Length: 202
Image (cartoon, rainbow, N blue to C red; front, side, top):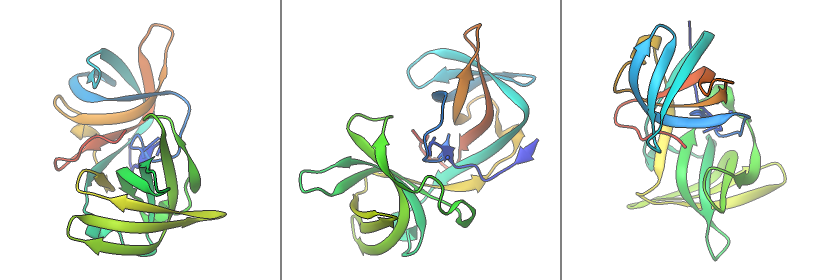
């Protein structure tokens, strides 16, 4: 099984996370806690309280997200920001994914973000950053436009990290985009584990 620094596939949060990364993909977004592992099938307690069985496709990839800080968002970085629009036309970040350099350009642009009402997703390069004691203000630049984003302590900031398949064990917090099967179970080829106290990506 491959080992990848998976970002939420939304976010390919998906991120992925899941995931991960922040470009939206077909399928059902699942987030939750692993309750049991039987061979290549996980049983999850999802974030909305359901139980879901997820088959891991042959050759599936596993990656992780770990907590990051606003100070780690440097000028020139490529990031994905899920945000809510503010009355003054700026954006208030809900979730930020710091992409590894290998994913620069993934899903670049500004679009609606379906995982939260009235939210947007912007995958872009940090053109300007101003740090302050309670967060940061950013200018994100992408072909055809730019967005001004405020990051407060309430925003979830994540970055990619490697993970091993054996980390998919009871108690692990995971996120993925999965395909629903005819028997009501799911199948996925990519799964993201939250490590180091990270919150699961949307």
